[in-house]
Length: 289
Image 1 (cartoon, helix red, strand yellow):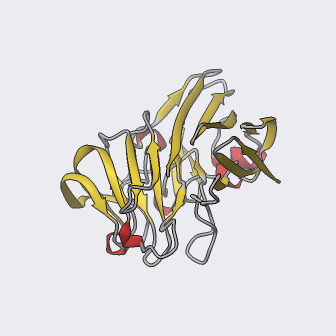
Image 2 (cartoon, one colour):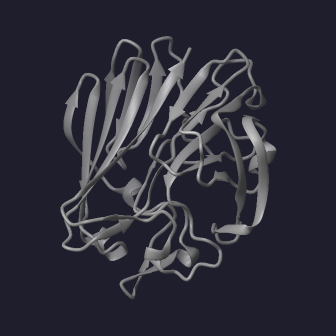
Image 3 (cartoon, one colour):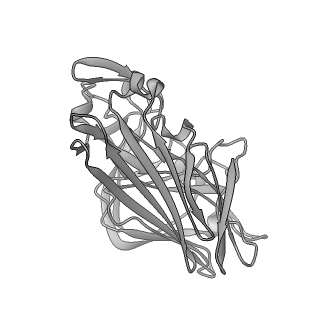
């Protein structure tokens, strides 16, 4: 099922499948989110309880082997609408027999979308209802239409960072999807990234320990979006060559390292949630007209 919320500036359409955003449309009828196409069949999935790929799609939790596909299983779960108002919607999903086969913890997830002026907040909340600590990673994966306006090209856009970034981007291994932190690409004094599909011939640009807590995706007229992710540790930028979109992905955690020992608890940036405790994190999209 699809639901639409709106205010005087924006309309947001979401689906109960994965609680995924499908459309974000301005009053002037500009569509900011990508549409599903031959390049990718998602728009803005939620990544839980892993981000990226497990090496060989397997991991060990408490000495038992489990299997999960890329980005976890939440994006394929059917949510129920817990509350809906004109400019806000809350969707919920819980662990079940199928999720417990992949991830041996019981949980309750709430995803809330708020429209505020020209912004939309995506609030992810998870409660551990197991009787032991629950480890997990979490990430967002919104895809933005690029270019936004007729007559533009992908290369007319740039990503402007809040702070100057100096980092070594790990290589995404094409055979396994794991990250190689030995074979890296160095970025120095990066304040603006002029988009070019050549950056994405292999996969994503992964920025570990990102300093910026917001970036702008804007054209030559400085129109586009601002993307804020204050409590995330990693930012990934991804598209496919010739595809008319770019994803800005805030992560807490990432794919397995290429030399992983498969131990889930030893993955980077693991969040450990005590029984009956909640974890909440937000990212925000603001349109710039």
